[in-house]
Amino acid sequence: MSKILYKKCEISELIKYAQSGDIKALEELIKKVQKQVYALFSHLTDNKSDVSDLTQEALLKMAKNIKQLNEISNFKQWLNKIITNTFYDYSKRKTDKLVDLDENELEKIKDKLGCEPGEKCLFSELEKLIKTALLTLPQHLRLSLILREYEGLSYEDISKITNTTLGTVKSRISRARLKLQEQLKEFI
Image (cartoon, rainbow, N blue to C red):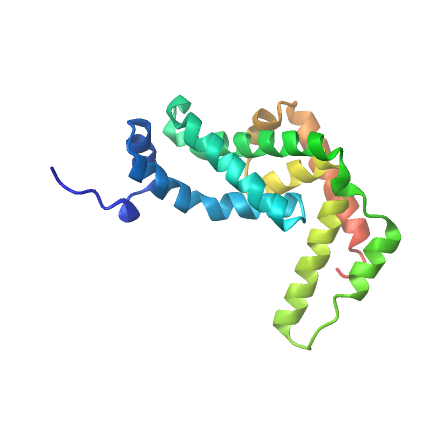
């Protein structure tokens, strides 16, 4: 029996092995996707401990349900559905505490972003402003926009993941972009 080099395997191969009960393949699959999952949650909420908990929860759901994935080519969409549902559950528990930033708090955050001159600093500052602006969006707008802009999903995929119509997805993304544009107009 030959030894499998899991680190060199493609995600699709790891999924096949994991679906057949190979724990080492599942561990490697988790290692390969955990940064993406963490990044997505970090755009959805700014509480770092919640981001870690949400990431762990979503990866655990992925691991428990990997055998239910019928089409390996749909893995990314399937995983994003798990992430979305995990975030929705979290939002219900937090009673929409995520979007409680008022204008004064937003201004305080903008004032604290001062740093040394330089391109890296400007990028970091702009990144913080964008994240702060994203967090002020209602969760349904934020989620649709993040799935489109950060995950690169099609409108159709987002529609399936969020269980909404294509028109609703387009409308939400459009409204989210307009709101972000309004909040960031002095910086763009």
